[in-house]
Length: 324
Ligand SMILES: Cc1cc2nc3c(=O)[nH]c(=O)nc-3n(C[C@H](O)[C@H](O)[C@H](O)COP(=O)(O)O)c2cc1C
Image (tube, rainbow, N blue to C red; front, side):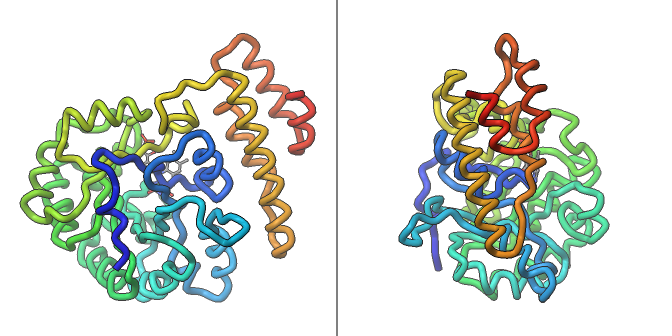
């Protein structure tokens, strides 16, 4: 079995899976700014992957950055998947290694209403037997290490005792705990006070499982601070921190010039991806790039005016023209 989880430094960092954000383009931007120790993809639905109609879109989500020799440039990379059908977990898991992934992660924490209605994400917390079956079927269908990302519970934070114990009993390669309940969404601070108890559960039930903490960790410095305070935690996952600073996996604070150049790099990758998907009979829509403008142009005199101008643009060339 591939075992990259054991080769990571203590206190390793992970770029969190973020739907509509951490696709093949933005992962490369983050890698350029300063890479985390591990990359996660945005999540892919197993029932889409397992269906003839959905496979094409699912495979686009599972593209990996490669160099001209076909070498994976963002290793180790973990494919995150979600759903509720054990057969579809098995079918998806079977293909992830040949697609170039180093690990497989099951999402059991997403609070999105549509995802939960479909029985996936955080809804799995309420169907523990099905959750176990999905993990078992995934494990049995791949040589990749299988991990889970979840929340403390669905409604009450004390659900963690039973739910996290149940997951640890599956002897996962790694377990990421977003320290909030589904009900709390992202509206309250992450419950760091529970870390010692969760570490103790891991030590008791499954010492070989890497424990990763997630929620409100904004950058490498914050991860290092938490690592000193809670040495039992193996790794730290950062999500929204990349919006405040794409260099968050480094100790560096970029100048405005560097941020502008990073945005220009992002635009080049965007155009490349659009051309590539077009040649595959698909498309890479322009509008979502607007969500990133604030990442690069904030916190200086005139930033709001510049952003307003950039938001009105209708193509990457128009964006470039303004930045010149
Ligand atoms: C735009 C967005 C999309 C997300 N998509 C996913 C996803 O696909 N899978 C997942 O496990 N979590 C997803 N999350 C949750 C993040 O991975 C992370 O758990 C959450 O943002 C808390 O971490 P943070 O405080 O570092 O941002 C998403 C979060 C955001 C903001």
